[in-house]
Amino acid sequence: MSLKSAAQWLGGAALLLLCELIGRALVDLLSLPIPGSVVGMVLLLVGLLIYGEVPSGLARVSELLLRFLVLIFLPASVGIYFLRDLSPRDWIVLMTAMVIGTLISLTLTALLLNRLIQRSNGRQQREQGNG
Amino acid sequence: MADWLTQLRTLLESIATPLSLSHPLVILPLNVLAFWLGLRLYRRTGTPLLHPIVGASLLVLAALLILDIDYANYQRGSGALYLLLGPAVVALAIPLKQNLTMIRRVGWPLMLGLLVGAVLAPLVAVVIALALGGGRTVLLALTTKSVTTPVALALAQEMQSVQSLTAGVVAITGIIGAVFGPGLLKKLQITDERVVGFALGVNAHAIGTVRALEISALCGAFSALAMGLCGALTALLLPLLLAT
Image: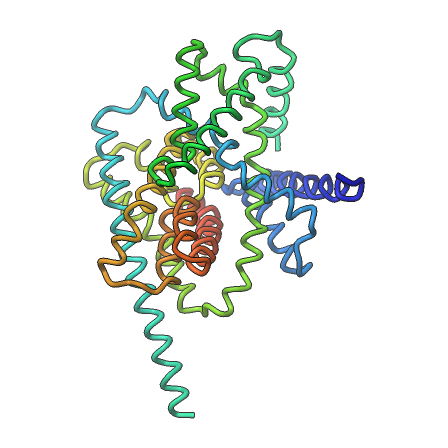
């Protein structure tokens, strides 16, 4: 790795950390109920939209982070095997809500989007027909 | 910011402790090894049922039981990974920025659908759980079921819900959506790949997006966009909603 790409890499990592810390500080300051890291993400998104492109170091660091996402939240996921305060009844409710709820909301979302696309296609065709 | 500094200090303290089975130098390689094996298992089988999070977490569980390490010590040893969760959430801004250019082509009617879908996904599950008499812990964990895990974990910390349960609910939701979603939509004669991608992204986040990418690049791009927007939207609206 050349010195230049190492510097870009470090710059990208520093930018991510900086956004997170600013987000956290803002949330503390304004006592918002939103997670600080999410505020940091919105800040970075707005910054990138204004800047117009993604700096290459930032792109590389974030790609790496997102590729190892499963590893990063592995400790939190393992905790599900150590939950003691849920009753068997809670587990049944949870599983039913997850399985049936996900299938229902998936269907409803798709049906709604299908309807919206067809309507906007229809309108475009009408407008073209009139014009 | 204070909690971030506390996390950092705990990490440094755990590194300074004498070498034992729950030292970060043991726990971190254990995590990496489980992740790598879980990933290989998933690549070999190719089924969303064996998503790396399933294989890796089971491998860690087995190691903890064999080595007799309790979960609290394992968590302390994994401090470095917890510190990366925040930057990982911030990093989601990059794919979101790259996919946002698609919005102009999608048009605003679809964005309306996305908004409704993002509300529907947790709402349907919470209503079912309420009807079955689910407790507060269960209801809270379900509110972030369709949000990508790093954002869901940040929200869980904010809302003081159980982080592990939240992570589990997100993973299971994603697996259900990815395994059954495409087949279900085909039965309903919904074949527009943009619609399938959007529905998978809103309801099954990253796991659904991987599945969508298998259908086509277009399907995957719409799924990634829907996942990012749905996550950001939920993170900004849900805490305000629960605060009132």
